[in-house]
Image 1: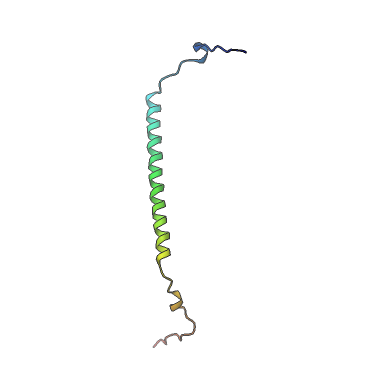
Image 2: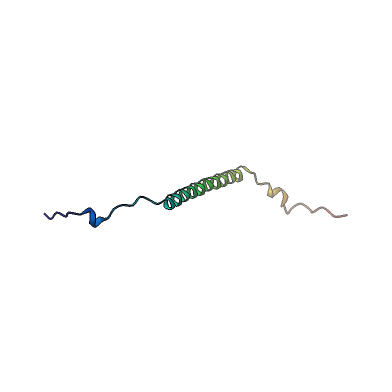
Length: 74
């Protein structure tokens, strides 16, 4: 069996994240959360709109009946 030994000098040291990268990470997290909330609101509005359309009754047949005479304009 071959065993590999990795020296920490070859791997390098991990640097602590800079202040700028921390700010960028926080900004991106806030942006993603904001977009997720916005998408949830849009989905809720869409679902409410669709359910409202399902509750409405279609009365168009009463107004588009071709058998009735049109009223005469005086």
